[in-house]
Amino acid sequence: ERKILDAYVQYPDYSYLRLASKINVADTTVRYNFRQLQRKISLTVQSAVDLGRLKLRHFIVFFRVPSQIPRDDLAHYLECPYRISITSGFFGELANQGYWAWASFWIPDQERALSIFKREILSLKPWFHELTYYEVQSKTTGVNLTFFDNRQWFFDENVFAQGLLEFAREWGHTFPPIKEFSYHYTPTQFDRIDYLLCMDLTRSYRSPLSDLQQTLQYYGYKLSKSGISMRLKRLREEQLFQPSVAFRGLGLPNFLTYLIECDAETRELLALAISQFPQYFISILDDGILLAISLPDGALSQFLF
Figure (spheres, rainbow, N blue to C red):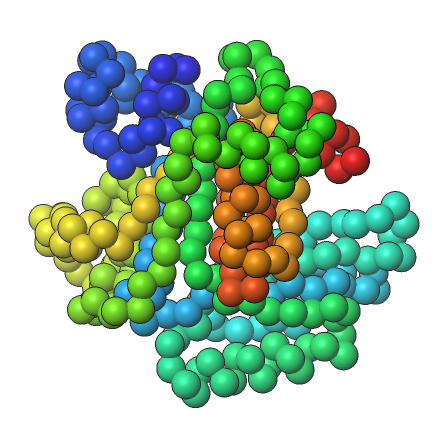
């Protein structure tokens, strides 16, 4: 299973047959172990999509929520047809301090839509504290199994002793390059069916054609499997996607999110440092960086303090 997991981390877009050929095992072995990993650690192959090519802009809104507003009510305050997700987390030791939250929005790249979005977001300031919004320029998602021995995680002590910036300055040249996925604002030709397929592949890049058929039927479109396959081939050839693996478990119960306003050089160093953690999600912003990492219990206190 570890061999298959390592291979999927490196080649997330490979078919069972192609991956089997790459690592010299039977394709039935790849298929079986992939399903085992799905069951054990919820292994999925997701994908970033080039929103700019789809005439969309990506924004993240970050804010502090008073304790009297329940988490379940956040969606009501942030009601918007373009909202993709809401993520929140407690901070501090006392419940009356509230909690931080952030929401992700995909907005049509049209002057009117952008103006309405920004006006609506700013109108939330009376309810939320320290509300700010940022535009996402690029995204990076990765898994680093270097420090996993199949039983537990271990880390280079320098990352905690030196701090992230100094660690990256001294050792960053030895790290593998980060696969940054930037948004490009030269639109491609697409229709609603292409858009629906793109959205489905962000959740599961390996969705069976039958599942994609069902998704399209839900929205009123009837396509044959061969028709869907031809569309997917064209969309992939246009390099609209960057697939990557994600998982839950493997002794990583903690998930930390940091929003840091900084210059371009600091953004690059922080991204390099974060790429040395087990599972990481990076959004490069117009004015900083949003970092999210999965950590084992043993590293949590070291990272915080």
